[in-house]
Length: 248
Image (cartoon, rainbow, N blue to C red; front, side):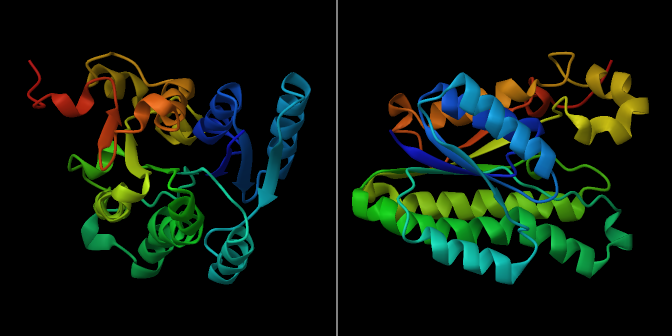
């Protein structure tokens, strides 16, 4: 049975990814920052429904570089088959108004934490000549959108890094991919509730994604049939990035 680490796994898309991976037969460790009650509830739920599998909730603040370094050092002795970096930090502001400290904080969680975790875990993957690394990006990195400059840049960095890492590790049996969701129906979309109808009207599918639809792609990328997929960006966006954007 393989073991996978998921960051930001207590709720929303992260919780759906944890459930999908367990359903696919993996043991899962997942991190959480402030959602301790939700993390415990998820671990208890899965333990009851899948008694033969190990699911462990681990507290970790990815914005704390010292805590992240200690966590990664501890992980270096563990053999993980996969890493899914789902944790993310939003920062929406017009580029002309951007605060560098807040932008760097988002970059730390969204990008640098991923590179640090991947660096620690990939060593054992390379030795085993088997491993799967997945980053949850965003369509914001694929299309320009006012107010998304800092967030989009952090997700764009994920794409560039993942492509390079895929090239560097490909001959060692490690795959590296990015999933780029569009709008997903989670509590993160609550601040945009007033604009939901307008937002959905711009999506060819006419609706937001369900967390399970993103999670299913992550689980597939950990599966044997996905062994030849690497260095890719997979939009899960209902066709949003496929259209030109001219509305009639």
